[in-house]
Structure formats: C-alpha cells, structure tokens
Image (cartoon, rainbow, N blue to C red):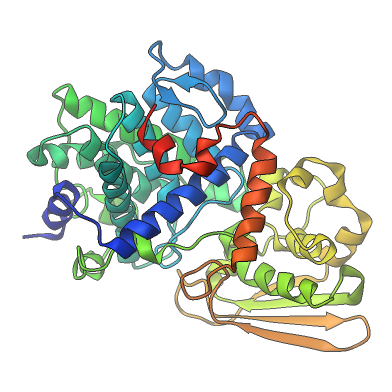
Length: 432
C-alpha cells in the first residue's frame, strides 16, 4: 500500500478517539471558535460579511458574526475570521494552522446537513487536522506556498467528507478535487497581506466545494500526492513516510499548540518571555535593546522592521512593534491594531532597537529553541533561553493565561455573540 492509499484509508475509517485525544480536540475547538468569534468582529472581517451572505440563496450554516449563509460561503467567512487575528492554533512542527481550515469546513458541512452527532464532529476534526498536519510534517524544505492553505484544504475536504457520508471508495476523488483547488502563496506572508486569512478562507470554501462535487457524481485525479504533477512535485517536496510511519498511532491534534497572543506564532517565544518579565516588573522605559537569536523561520516570519504605514496584518507579524507593546501593556490587544496608538513614540523608539537574527539552526521549519537577550538602560543584561514556545504542549499556558485569553476574546466578540461559542462550543459547531 502506498502512502496516499494509507492516508485515504485512515481518512475514511471509523475512529473512536482515545479519551486524551478527545479532550484535546474539545479544547482546541473551544480555542478556535473563541478566537474566531473575536476575529469575526474585526474591521477586516466586517468587510466580508455582506459578500459571504451573497454566495448563494440557501443559508443554512452559521456565521461567527451572526446570521447564516450557504455552506461554502460560511466556510469562507468563518475560516477568515478564525485566522485574521493570528490567534488560531498551529502545529508547530508542521507549520500548519490546520484547525482554522478544518473547523470552518466541518462546521459548515455539519450545519448544511442539518446537524451532526458530536462524536462524529470530533472525529472529523481530529482526522482532518491529522492529515493537514501530516502533510506539513512530511515536507522536506522551506515553504514557498502557504502550507496552512495547501495542506489545509486536503485535510478539511476529507474531514468534511466524513460528515457528508461520502463512500470510502470516493475519498480519492475528494482528495483529488481538493488538491486541484489548492492555492496560497507565501508572498502574502512576505508582504504581511490580508490575503493570508483569505487563503485560509478560500481553502475552507474549496473543501466544501470538493465534497459537494463528489456528492453530485463528479470525480477528481487520484495520484495527487505522489504523481508526476502531484503535491510533492509542484507544491513542496514530501517524504510521506515521515508521517505515515505513525499514522493512526500518534494523533497529531494532540501536538497542536494554542496561541496565547493574537500575533504570528513565530513571535510567541519572545513575547512569552517578555510577558513573564513584565510580570516581574520590567517595563518599556527600562529597555534599551532586544535581540532574539532564533531559527531561520522566526527571522523570516516576524523579523520584519517597523513601518509607519504598516497595516494591522503587518503589525501582527512584526516583532519590532509587538515586543514594545508587550513591555508597555503586558498584553497584545487587537483593538490597538486599528488605531494611531500603535505608533506611539515610546513604542517606535524601541522598535528600531529590536533585532531578530538567524541562530544557525539548519531546520527550515523549526520554531525553537530561541535565545532572548534584553539590554536594560542601566546597562544590565537579561538573557533567557526559550526551549519551547508558550502554548505548545511542552510549555502550556497557565490557567490564568488561558482565562485572560478567553476574557479578551469575549470582550472583542461583544455582547451579541452566541453564548454557546464559549459555553458549549461543540454543540455550536455540530448543530445549526
């Protein structure tokens, strides 16, 4: 059996999640929807609201901003909302925000079918995240295409296929059509463009479309991972044995990290340490310079300089402004990203003194370890080694940090948000 066949068999199999995996899936659904409902009220997401409702005439799937839309449109809007604040869970080893695409697609599929059993929803999420993350783990080089979208659409489509009761022998068609629709470029990340969450949105919508087409009798190409023009040849080279060797034995959803801060994951190693230093009494006015020595992916993703004309999307991926914000406020508040307050003189003064440097790590996908060096204005130096990013399984958030994130999500979501998103997120996801 080749790797593609093994993955398709896994995607279609009847899974009973082990208790710890089930608990992890529930926890990550709750985190994903909390960040998503906060993102749904952002100025960027509000621009999408009318467009989402315009895609079709049969609104049956819930929008995180309130109201309903056709399934593909709901998947598009909700995928955008989940990722637009950069607050969504990520599999660090895979560099894939799998839950963003998979959750948006699974929720839309469940609602479109009039509801789904909660255990079926949990299994679909876990399977979809596993496959999307597995493709990232199998990658042997740096990203050129935006992996959360290109790997995400395949995992999301196969997850949605489970809820649509697609026969096992048609899962190859679902994967094939999902691959045919795969898109997303890292140029959006280089420029810190709002196209990043739009690529997540497009992948979620494409997943729903792929399932609907197979339901209607359409077929797709089959050898889409290992074929002459498959994923491994055109999108990025894969060694699928790195994933399939443990397929079904290790549930990748249990390896997913939660983001404590609404910013690019690559910023969280430094921000986690700076938050701790803030709690210990360090303040913005005390700091003369910050140096971060980190793997090349960190430098590439958040080492960009401060810009006076930066957009909110740019700021979320700019450690040069995120670090001063943390030292001034002790929190990263998304509300500030659309205000002149982001350009306050005291923040800008330190922004030019923040340096992110490649530490020589040969792993192009690594996010740790890192080393933070803070030089105080009085000449003192604080040095911290960061073996794992805050929110990862190796460095979990404290109960107080988790509560602070949820409190901020609730405030940003506003009083009109559906209370089930926070009180019973699985019920919200499974039922329209």
